[in-house]
Image 1 (cartoon, protein in one colour):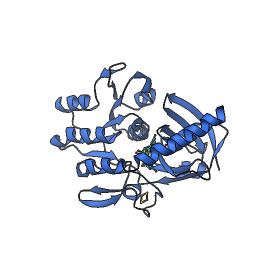
Image 2: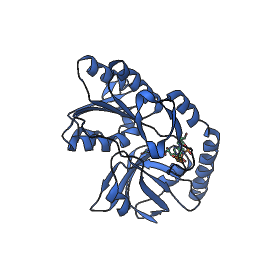
Image 3: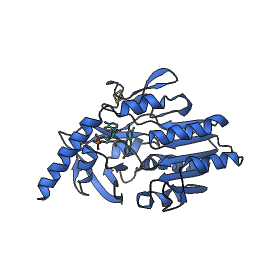
Length: 280
Ligand SMILES: Cc1cc2nc3c(=O)[nH]c(=O)nc-3n(C[C@H](O)[C@H](O)[C@H](O)COP(=O)(O)OP(=O)(O)OC[C@H]3O[C@@H](n4cnc5c(N)ncnc54)[C@H](O)[C@@H]3O)c2cc1C
Ligand code: FES
């Protein structure tokens, strides 16, 4: 069992938790993830290691409440326990040799992008971070990004905070102004990553995307997370989650991620009804 050491609500749908998991904290690297089960009957879900503290033995996860398991997890409080917390899994993000990078995060994807921006900054790399959200209430990790970026632009779809518009606008502006990044690393909704790649590809700027297909075992055995990369079948859990954005078939991946939608909606309804009954 793994103790929740700290819990913080970051915005109405996003929660941060620090979990006591010293063996995971000891080995964690940016870009890696864990797979957890909230309780014995729970399903496994992957969440990125957003930060870790080797000395304290804690691992930070930041999750958006989107369905049954994240809803259940969000009902746990500091001092309580979760059943399983396995990791670190996946390949760490390759950062060697990057001197100037642009990090583009969208929504809760910023929780995944942040440790990468932080690691690049600690390596002495020049970092431009662009983070985007639907509106002001959903902005997360602004101070954290500010602390590890040479330049930070916050975008909101409705203009209620930062600049109005989508993340590809300042990215395109910077590239057109002559900025040349060794690499653009983007993490967020699939559609956002697809358009970031469409922005960088004409300029031939290496672009890494973090893919988050359905994962079950996280060890390359079940095939649940397979995707097509440059015409070859890859497993995001062991070959990724980072891939060359120019080689991803985004349309196929988006279609696959919708496959379980009816089952996911049904389980979320069940969990919500369960909590409603407990409260009554
Ligand atoms: C490598 C990786 C890292 C991730 N990191 C984060 C993170 O740091 N923060 C965060 O909020 N989310 C992250 N996700 C997504 C997160 O795993 C899903 O939001 C979560 O599984 C939803 O489960 P649910 O039961 O609450 O929702 P459900 O209603 O079951 O599903 C809602 C949506 O979540 C996704 N999803 C559901 N089950 C899985 C699964 N087993 N594997 C992958 N995706 C699933 C699907 O897109 C689905 O449509 C990550 C996914 C992957 C693959
Ligand atoms: S999650 Fe099973 S093969 Fe990747």
